[in-house]
Length: 468
Image (tube, rainbow, N blue to C red):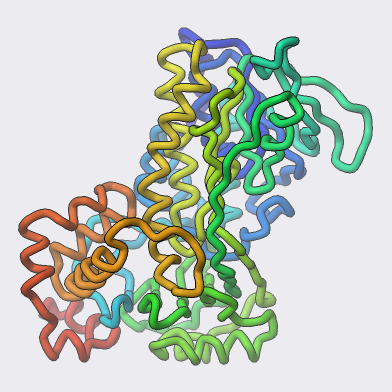
């Protein structure tokens, strides 16, 4: 179990402010609590006790992926977090051993990967992180406050605090700090506030994808033993646009999300939800839902575009200010990188603070600019496979897609390639690893056998049970 930590023995500074209480903000505040005497987390919503959804997280009702790299960051920030989350009801599943996974036109092997997927509601995950954070004696939370602007030095070269008030109006107050961290999400107003202080507008890259998905909670049917604990049907980009997934979460529930790219997604009514599931490239999600008891309505989420703000390119930038999470870069959520990338930014901030507060903003934004290159490339390269999606394709885009497709097919029947793919997916391995000589030789010379092409999840379960 997580226990309160004492004040940092040799603090970098006195006061740090984080505004935005979602995952990136919570992890960042946890990291800063080891570097500052006091950390204040400011959030527009009012935090309630327990695992409850809030207005500021509109995607909370949908499936979220906490990658192993993200879990490692959380465990490093809050020792004992992994076991605390498990005790709260999170389901720990082997990414390939417990997961029936249709991808690149094949059902993947069910060999153990040794890499866990952590399955729980977003609300439970946030509540557990928040509990660990609030156990820190030098952290305080100011919820029910919105930030209205920055306080700056006379020459505007440094941010010295924030202005805040109750949402919708009321008396403004000032909160001062040596470091302000914006984790307020895609709607961050830092670009406008910096312009008002005389800084240039930050350059943005947007790639429009019109992704949408619908989700619903179900009670797992009694006696239902399909041989898998989680089920995913992935699209074969760019030939198909639809995806679906069933994951077990706390309280013996299934969370089911289905959707697609470029406007191909269901509406909120039950008939549309089930008909969309029927139209997936494999029938198994629809079959699983036929006898499952719904526990609530269908909820929708829409995501219009990937958004990257290039703060690393700004010629001038104030000290005392950094950004993390979606306020810096927001990815297509289907790829499941967002929370882990936010954690990586928080980790990077901690590393930069070891060199002191002087020049921190410059060091940090340059390092994060580099850090974002790989996850941004992975997400947008998938989206840009659709001819309808506008955006600059990287060099050798077609060749890379051809090789990537061949590698994904190899991962459908080669255990070594599958484990490598899982490690890459969980940000434990660089994508460059799929070009190693041994893997490249297999990619270029191997092909699936007829029995691999005819696999079904039920057959895979039998193989696993009988050790065939």
